[in-house]
Image (tube, rainbow, N blue to C red; front, top):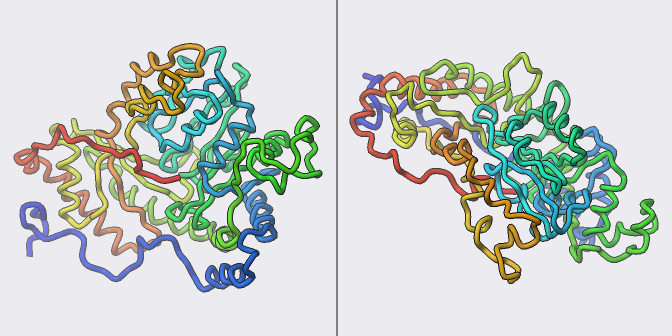
Length: 443
């Protein structure tokens, strides 16, 4: 049997059929079911607070923050965090163009706008050099997304923020439990938010969590969308006039079935994360020296980690493979049995009409500039790395358990394709396919 012939040319697939649940996620056990059923059988407890209070307390201790506030979604937590930072009309936030829309779009509802920064091609996170090009007197905050699990360059970001007296909001939705130089991401900025939807590496079914060490930010987030918690316990003096009603007019509490599920998931997360890290690092160790492939993970000596490795990706260098298009590269890998291998990440948001021409609130001009003090869209012209990133990235398997025999099959599939790239050049006609997706990941 000849296993060296590419499957795309009718050779044998590298990936053999197996019954392993190595990709099964999330893990839901009888423990999860029992705790959710307890809430369900209490009827009105579904919209109660006692389980959520426990979840918030456990989460803040795990995250090593003073305060935690559970929301109905990660998107809601980001809007509340922005309000907590006093972002309002005419204010600008700086955010990477390559991210899921919820990292920044809530700023519209607060009357602010976004100035897009380019990304770093190695980390896929915000380019700290470009942040400096985008700061103005209107800048209120930098939104840092630890994209696809890779920690951003927090040292440089915090240095810039301090020098210019602006806030840092961390979006850790892709990086639950990830470390930056031995310290958890989400503990560096002024406030952090995390999605807990069911596809994330740490999930609660649906929900989001805001964490901060700043009492005023925490209490502003409460006042924004938590009418019941907006009570006499509020200590921030100017917020006391708004007690018992939500300033934003929102109801952002998480339901307690999700809180119950989140508590169990959190208790088991660290040990599950260790298994994921072992599997993913073994996989990368096996393919990192192949031509055409650049690893997307921190250097081992950095003491930084990828957490639960949510939405893992690799970086593609076509010039090492005779300029083979990433589309044909991924097509060949899918033929080998790697079903979820596709080019691209999130499409650059600045390319969408929502950030160029759409007038959401009937203000007579595009919403992005309706409340701005300048036309921030002119800054989009220099986002060169963001514009091309979907032709330089590809999804890789997200292993949840370490199984050497199975992972070796995947490693061999990459080796097989990279070793035979010259044959693929003969059928390569996919260079102009539109890669990436607006909704690649969900928050």
